[in-house]
Structure formats: structure tokens, C-alpha cells
Image 1 (cartoon, helix red, strand yellow):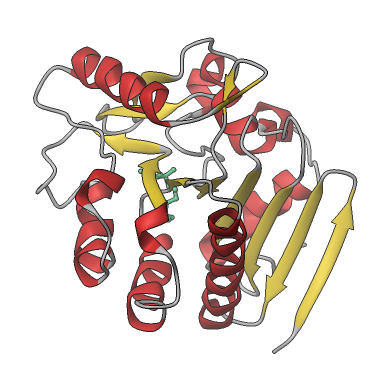
Image 2: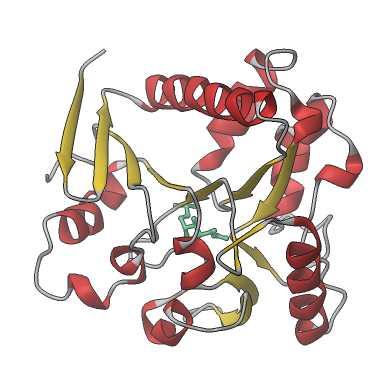
Length: 250
Ligand code: 6PG
């Protein structure tokens, strides 16, 4: 397995020769981090990304970590969710439930989906309340232990799109976003909540992301207008887990 670590000031970049190895390494890290929190008698609060990339991770965890993680101590939220019914094929919750939650022994109350029943503002408010009533605060800021993010080819992350950069600094916990092409309504965590997380991990795979990964990590012209490039941790570092295809232009 060829892996190179590129460290710089506030981010660690891990490159893996293929996606399977990336998922295997990330899963082990997830286990170790969640065990540490369990041993400190704290709940482990995680926000998942949606889309295609995390599917392999969910499958791998379901197949290999059924009894190796204290799932009853892990609480799952989402960095963003499409405003659809939970059983809709577009639902990020639905994907995670199908591939992971339905295969492991995790209490239903540990899963905190965005409930969209037609009114996106109601969904936004309810999700905001769900986060506030579960997460701990540090310096009056809600703190996730881990936020897993993907990156779109346009540089969006969660559902903060390049034409909605104000969400990077919004004082709300979450906002109603609109996909720039489909205009689909989405609920997204805002930049400050993401940046308060103890650990932020970008999981990015495939050649289709190589251009945007290069633009962000090499700070090419215009990178500072890309939401994913504007995610700067309050403390700790941002980690990138890339497969060789996504990293090929670095
Ligand atoms: C979503 C995501 C979104 C995703 C990126 C990458 O709901 O779609 O949360 O931010 O992470 O668009 O998506 P892929 O993994 O499908 O490339």
C-alpha cells in the first residue's frame, strides 16, 4: 500500500493507492477515536457526509466492525441532507440506514436524521433543536467530535455551494440551501459549526475530483471562493483522505 503523508500548517493529507485501503485505514481510525471517547465516558458525536463517496465506508464498517465499535456510544447526524422523505432514494439518511445502521446494533435514538415533511424551515428548526439538545458545548459553541465531508466538483462541501458562501459564516447552526443546478432544497450545517468540530475529515475519491482537489490544496487561482477550501478548523487539523485517483494532480 503506497501512502504518503503531506503535512502542512493546519492540514494533514493522506493519499492511499486505492479506495479500499483508504476505507480500511479510515475505519480503523474511526474505531480508535470512538474507543478513546468511550473510555472517557463521553458520547461520540459524528456528522456524516452524503452522496456516493461514503457508501464504501458504510459497507466496510457494516461488514468488519459490527462488534468492534461501541455503537451504542456513537450518535450520527448529517453535515447536510436533501429535503426529501427518509425513504427517498436521494436521502443521505436512507443510504446510511440501508448500508450501515440496518446491519449494526445501534439504538434508534442515536440516529438523528433531518426530518423533512414538506416544510424546509420546520425541518431546519427541528434539526437545529436536535443538535442543540444533544451536543456538548465548548466556549458556548456546539462541538462535533468528527465531521466527515465530501467535496463536489464545484468545490462545495456539505450543502454549502459556491453561490451561497454566506453559509460559511452564518450564525445559524444550519441553513436551507438550494442545489445550484437542480434547485433541490437541502439542510446544511453552517461553516462555524463545521469548523468547531474536534476533527474534520474530507473523504475524496476518484479521478473526477482530481481537478478540484488540486485547486484547493495547491491554492490555485480562485481557490478561496470554494466552500471546501474555506473550512478552517478552530482548533486541531483538517484531514484529507484521498485515493490515488483524486490526488493524481497534486
Ligand atoms: C450530498 C453531500 C455532498 C457530497 C459531495 C460529494 O448530500 O451530496 O453531502 O456535499 O459530499 O457532493 O458527493 P459524491 O460523494 O457523490 O461525489
